[in-house]
Length: 275
Image (cartoon, rainbow, N blue to C red; front, side):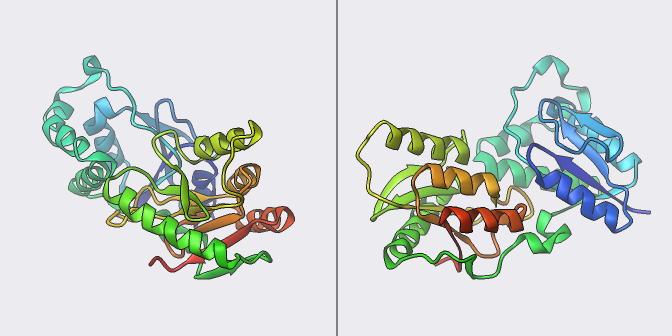
C-alpha cells in the first residue's frame, strides 16, 4: 500500500494535514528537518533528517513505501555541516548547489525533481485539504474601500516585481505608497516592524493593505503562502485596514477563527483574482 510522507515544519498546517490524512484512513509518515520540529506530536513516530544526509533519507522513505509527499509548515535554509555529508549525497552536491544559486524557487524545484527520481510524487497541501483555498470575493463582514482596492492593486503589482526577483510573497501599501516588503525574516517581522514605527510616532500614511500572493512562476505544490488568525492580529496591530490575497493561491489556516477575528477587529479579507 502506498504511503504519504508529511514533511513538516513549524505552524498549524502540518497538524491540519495529519488530521485529514488520518481521517481518510491513511497513516502518514511524519518527517521533520532537525531544528524545525512541528506540532504533530501524537500522530506517530517521526523520521528526522538533515540535508547533509539527503540520500539516506530518501532511501528510508522509499523503503517505508512512500510514493507521495506533501511539504507543510515554515522552515528556513539551515547551515550545512560538510563533515556530516555522506558519500551518496556528495554526488548530488553539484546539482543542489547549482539550484541554490537560483534562489528558493530553484532549490524547491530541484527537491521536487530529486524526490521524483526516488518514485515520490510531491503534491500540494491544497491537494490534501482543498478547502484551505478561498474563491474570489470578500470574506467576512468588513468591506474594502475604494482606496483599499487601489492599494491592493498596487500591492499586487509590487508582488509581481518582487516575485520575479525571488524576494518574497508579501508587501504593504498605503495610499499608493509601498511601506514594507517581505524578505527572509518573514511576514510577522515585517508587520511587527510597522506596528513599532506607528507606536514610535513615525509619520506613515493612514490605513494600508497587506497583500499576499505566490510568486508569478512558483511551483504551487510547495511553499504556498499561508494566512491565519495570527496574521489578522498582526495586521490590526500594524494599523492596517485589511488583507488582500490571491484567490486560489494562499492557504487559509483555521478559517473560521480567522474570519471571527477579522470581523471583531474591523479587518477586511479580500480574496482577489490576481491581475
